[in-house]
Image 1 (cartoon, each protein chain N blue to C red):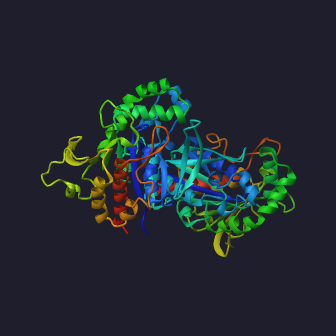
Image 2 (tube, rainbow over the protein chains, first blue to last red):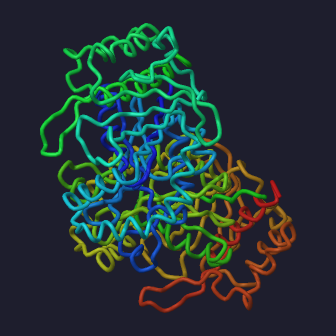
Image 3 (cartoon, rainbow over the protein chains, first blue to last red):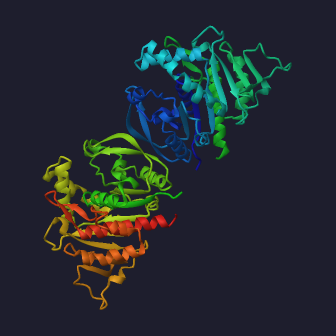
Length: 312
Length: 312
């Protein structure tokens, strides 16, 4: 009997966690996936936070001991009675009984903040969009779905910045993959399916050998699909970049590297079997095809499948 | 660092669980005790139970896997996020964060129904009043505190009887102590502080050596404090009986046996230090002194203290 495979998706508020989570769940098959948002482990409800001035980003505002306890239980396949925080009302509701499926995706603000929690994941992703893009996303979401005004969102962002700095962004160091969607030009903001992606691949998990796609002259700085060496938080990493205007032919090379190593992934790459791969809602609700998103979904899926082989 | 000591108080609805639990918590010092009622682990709320016809006594109506998980966590001193069922509204509320104190008392209907749950307790008590007395107690409580009519309570008792038979009463076999308060004459019912008690002491935990109180001629069948051999559910047990009309002098002999073995218990026995020992509310709310209850509280406390020595 194999245990569930646990994926972490951590990042600041409106960094794109839910979008990435849903896309990967779609690729893995929703019936195989248990989704958990660590916001449910808040210690104080919205009113209590407003009264005391503590932000949801502060470790003290969360039952991190219970979060890591539940992660450890899920990792061994045990059910949990998960607390439920309603973003709509800002209050807690009765808990939910959850039996983990084959894959468990944990998304949240502070998922990597304790050692015991970090030990529970098979794959750890950190989302790090440029702050200007994150502000755009947060304004859009919180005004449309959580009943705030634009001014309230901007004030909240400013209020939260010290906690983002102190508690959220340092978690980047614990991730296996840092995902940064960014507009092609620095002064542009949200651009739907045409965002580029920068994937920082930390050598903490066995990534596919992407050096196969390097040009023979080892200079692909002009290519819409690029692999390069860099340091992230002082440590050596590979950086895979895919531009929003890359063609299917160009991204196919990366897909083949992954599929050769993980044959099951061929079904996932097949656009006829998986029409949702890389699909994203544009600014006016229309569906766009993003190859940068598709590659991001595929590499995370690659690692989830790889992890199932580790103990099958 | 020592782990919490866990006491189980199991018995059917209105068997006197809460009364015994509160009394023991009082004796151990409320600040040292964490009280947990397993009714909080119901799977269905009152309305769902009414719709499907399942009773709260049925294992399927409870998250027994989560209950035993939480028991195992508490036993190792870990905090839990405990579900909350409101008997007043019949619905679930947001969960509560609970860090175990030195002593944890778990009271409920199905506390001994799984092997893993049973393994979590240091001391297991089962409450078995005569069914006629339990019916009196249930009518009194449910009409006064839970908004039912006498007819509804009687109908509920009848409806629950098959589940009581199948799921509740068999748990008696797993207990270390079976507590039966009973009226001196069979045809009497509730009689306040004057109920007798029959304590079945199963040799599964190290009971004090009560043979010291046996009369030299080994016949104390007429004494208001009696020790005898018997079988319970087919297995040999000691039976300690204390009548409601026993005098303080007569029960003092039993208290001394326990105190000699467990010196700290002297403070507990001291009526000046512990005026609440053996106190119980009479039928009209007045406070009565019950020596049978006092002895019951003391022997359970004896075992709780004994358990702390096992791993200090």
